[in-house]
Amino acid sequence: MIEKRQILVGVVVLVFGITFLLTREYSSSSLGSDIRILTQYLNASVQESGRFVYKIPRKESDSIDYNILRHAGSIYSMATSEYSDEHSVGAAIDFLVEESSSPVEGLDNSLAVWSIPNFNSPKTKLQAKLGGTALAVVALSNLPNWHDYENELIRCGNFLAFMQKEDGSFYSKYYPETVGRSDEWESLYYPGEAALAFGYLFELTKDEIWLEHLESALHYLAVSRSESGEYIKDHWALIATAKYFGFKLSNEQKHRDIYLHAVEVTKTMLLQQITEDKINRFLVGGFSNNGAITPSATTLEGLIAISPFIKNSDIDKKDLYTAIELGIEFIRSGIIRSDELKGGVKRAIAQFDVDHPMATDHNRRVDEIRIDYVQHVLSALLGFRELKK
Image 1 (cartoon, rainbow, N blue to C red):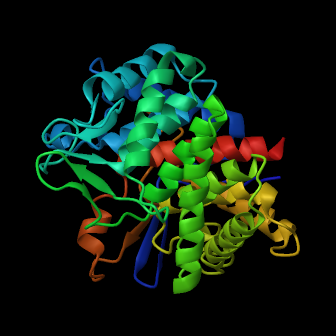
Image 2: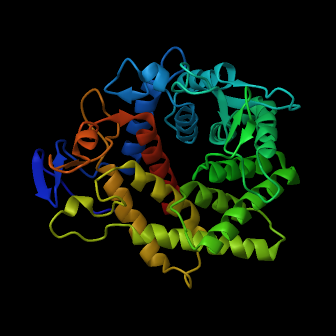
Image 3: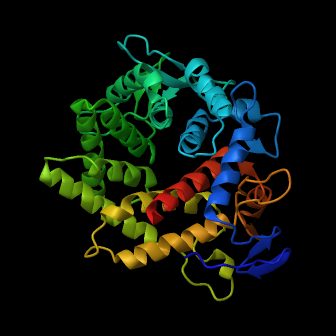
């Protein structure tokens, strides 16, 4: 059980150049209550246009700094919550599918989510990001009425397959006006997001081609990271791997490679958790030494998803579940439980000392709320609730 605790309003702790400001009361409200208020915050954030109120405090630049990937990710978390509002979700989907998606010229039966300058993306070239279309698939796949979007799902899948190379890796972006597919910039998270999208496509359609794309994507990550010896905190890859392990698999060697990759990524994550701090107990459970909430929430999403598939002989399951519970307690401390921002999630619970080189940028954003901060905490809590059943 999560330990009950009460943090007094206005406590300030200064240690190692970091000031921890706990300006709101945090009590051990029920997990269900937190899931409800987080979902309600996202429900209320959807505007008539279908856009979310992207960030608080709001700025004039928000309309052009809008991130369509975070929009899709927020729909995904809402779609998995019983407290989501049908009208709000529908409006957000319309903005994603009707306003931000269109075919790729020259690619039959395709659909991609576009990052459009000054519309749903900062001032950049028109482009379709692998992660945007992947998260659209993940979001639409979790809708109760996903059948209504089956055509769009398959067309998005065709674009993702087009973006995958023969070795299982991906092009990160597609520029229709210039080079087409581009791997000049490599994303950490897009491959895992695309793999998860393939997993959903196979789960919903039973078409083996999507399972082949999923396995190829995960195996490339497993082999390439094994060769480099660098196992990055890739929560999307762990979530996709958990989806993959839920299917009947035939290639034992690839299965083994993918499993070992998941074990190593899990170990990397666990090593970064703060499990004890006698001076500053407020960091305990988190995975970031500056008190940021979202990096801890995303890490927990991955750990929660993969935990049922990890063998006790590779990682002590008791230690793994203890780490997850400790992390859940930490991210819940960032949820706002009162005033008009109820259900929002702060960027961080810590401020750097004024002499710290990162103080100016970090400190001005500590109390910022953004839709992805809320989405990832909500997704982690939803996953934790399922894990506890």
